[in-house]
Image 1 (cartoon, rainbow, N blue to C red):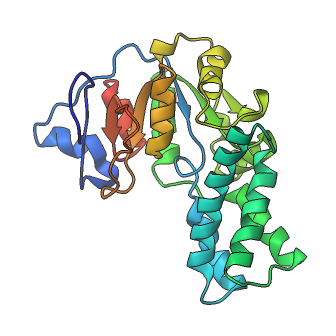
Image 2: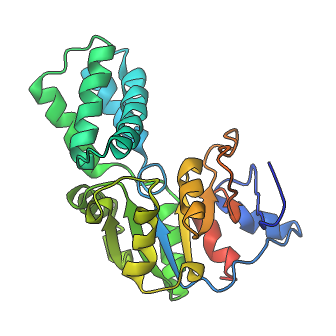
Length: 256
């Protein structure tokens, strides 16, 4: 991993204890000064997109994991391609299109009933175990919290309610306000605009390194949740300001 002018925090193998375990061993992380608000990516950061795998396997025995993996990959690809094409379609429909393609590519019989069940599962994705305690710790520090996501509002609101984190959020910000997907700078600028803070006072949090690069390119301070220690950062010209393994680590960076 590159170093340089960005201050990195890297905690590997610490699990949910994150920086707490590192501090106990004498490690002192770089502090994140001046943060007034956090904007969180939703899918893969707060919500586990692969929590649909069990239902995929129930509906298509032996093909659950390949279907879930291909569905997610095509969902991301379609959102990027539609942005490049200038042909926006909301994320619910993009997700459905991706599901149809993924099933067809695996020669699976995606009936209307199966399609509806899988799409409905996206409204109740499981939250990662560090999400609620991490958000609660940040709320206790008086920070404003938001989701900033490709998701369309109904999807995000339903997922937040299902995960029991809706009351911890000040607002949910969807790309539908600008009708283009990440990594457009227009998306990331919605964060400081909607939360009423300067770019330098907003921390953008994502488990997706490509998303971190997009936010950094737009001038936001970035916090990469490196959920998979084996995943290297993307080679897109930017580095995260801070790298941690769990959302519960963020409050520790602020001295909480």
